[in-house]
Amino acid sequence: MTDPVAADAVDHIADQWAAERPDLDVGPMEVIGRIHRVGALLDTRLREVFAQAALGNGDFDVLASLRRSGSPYELTPTELSAATMVTSGAVTKRVDRLERLGLVDRQVSESDGRGRVIGLTRQGRALVDRLHPLHLANEDQLLHALDAEERAQLAGLLRKLLLSLE
Image 1 (cartoon, rainbow, N blue to C red):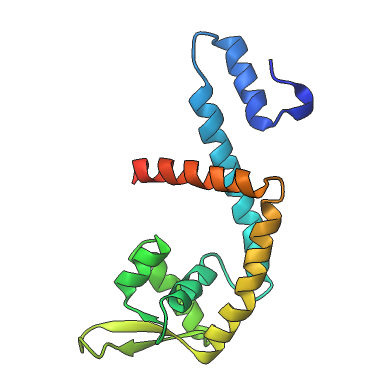
Image 2: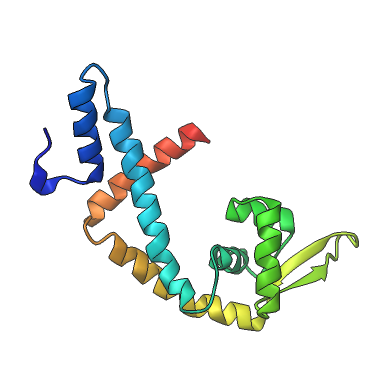
C-alpha cells in the first residue's frame, strides 16, 4: 500500500490493481502512467506562454524550429515536418495560420523552382526572440521540484528510453 501523504493518482490506480490482481506486476504501468500524466500537465502549462501571444497549439514549435535553423531561417516543408515531429498535414495547417499572422512566409526554393521554403518574417523572428526566454523560464519553473542533478539524471533516463523506442 502506498503512503497516502505522498501518493499521486497513479499510486491510487496501482493500489487498486494490486488489491484486485496481486498476480500482475503493475510496475510498467506506474512509469508509463506517470509519463502520460506529466506530459499532459506539461503540455497544458507550456501552452500558457504561447497563448498570451495568440499562438495556437504547435505554432511556437514551427517558429522556434525556423529560428534555430540559423540564417536565413528557412526550411522546406519536409525539413519542418522532421524538426517539429509532426505530419506534413499538421505543418501545412500551422504554416497557414502563421502566414495569416504575418509570422512566416512561403517562397519558391532557389534550388528547386517547384519546391517551397517556409521562412521567418522579421515579425516572426522578433516574436520568437521575445518568447523563447519566457518559455525557458516557464520550463525551469515547471521543473522546480527537481535539483540540477535530478534533472540531468531524468534527462539521461528519458533519452535512453526514447532512443530505444525510436
